Length: 372
Image (cartoon, rainbow, N blue to C red; front, side):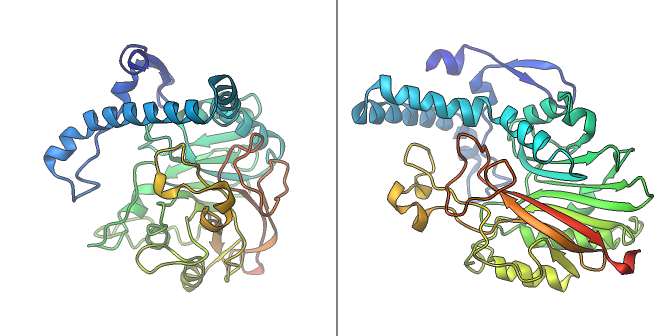
């Protein structure tokens, strides 16, 4: 463990320059910043790095002891190897395969919680790289691996992204309100189709409790209207058509100021003139996540027994594709937790075949008569 943590360097590709850098794992740890967690002190921020290292050592030792007590290394290490191979080592190739085969004809693909390694492999892919512009945030966070990305089909958007306008949205947050949005969570761009139609296309990954979702949607709409705080000369994007794919992290049952309810989210986006792939009133039981955590991971507050995964797992309607109701109507929407375009209800995922803990959403939109 000490050799891995403090001696062996890992080869990491920089997504902006494509160069390879070599970091020892302890160098990749990040301090817990007081700017994001105001309740911690300067001293606690300073000590957060050595404390993380110590906690990692203690946690790993406990896990190994637990597994050796409950089983034997010849059994559990093989099982762990299968899981690691499918969900870690082969996660990017498996994800690329699904995108290339099942969704390789889509005009627009929005992705959330994307690693910098995925971005590079998508650009290098003989299929995706040739077929799509791979667009990522200017402020990409290569260490956090939770970046929002947009793929634009080259035959539909030959020039790719015209401009990144993420900062217009982030500068449109209501003053005095702290919105939990980190680097790379939001990507907003403009693009023009091969028919000369201008678009604003967004991809967003919400915080765990979904409390940033409504403020971000509000900010995007303000930016489109040119109502950016203290910026009277911002561009008017009101004639652009909006496509907004998001992991909203909404819940079947919300808790005011603690968890964003999906019904309340639907009511809110409807007041903005928006519709979704699920309609203006989303079904709270139309789940796009179904996963639960064992006790062999660090967030024990989210762990449960296998027999309790239905009661205590993350089974919620979290994912949306938003658009303005004056622009489009939904011809068809479907979800997928298998990778082959179908969704198996009451099945926990990710699986060894499907690498994501969120289902895939796909929708076919038709232009309204108002936009013809």
